[in-house]
Length: 87
Image 1: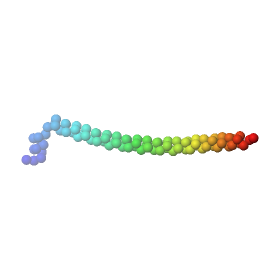
Image 2 (image 1 turned 60 degrees about the horizontal axis):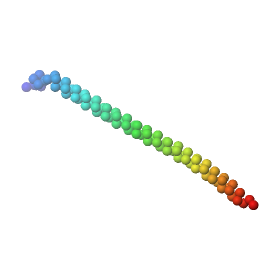
Image 3 (image 1 turned 60 degrees about the vertical axis):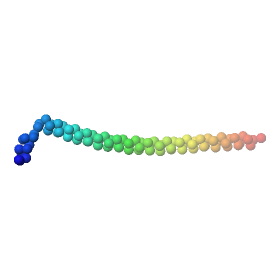
Image 4 (image 1 turned 180 degrees about the horizontal axis):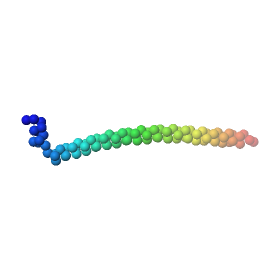
């Protein structure tokens, strides 16, 4: 028996079509899974970078606010001490 004879004997177009469709579906599913994983990773990295930058901005703003509060408290303390020194 030759290969040609086996192909002619056992070839069924419906089975071949089913196997081809399943193979194509598996390939599409695999490519989509890889693409979605890459997109998820990129989104995660972007969100991390965004959170880091916002944390830095928040820290700077907090520092400025505390400096202003410290300046105001120092000014009030000086005024209070001047008022208490006056006879």
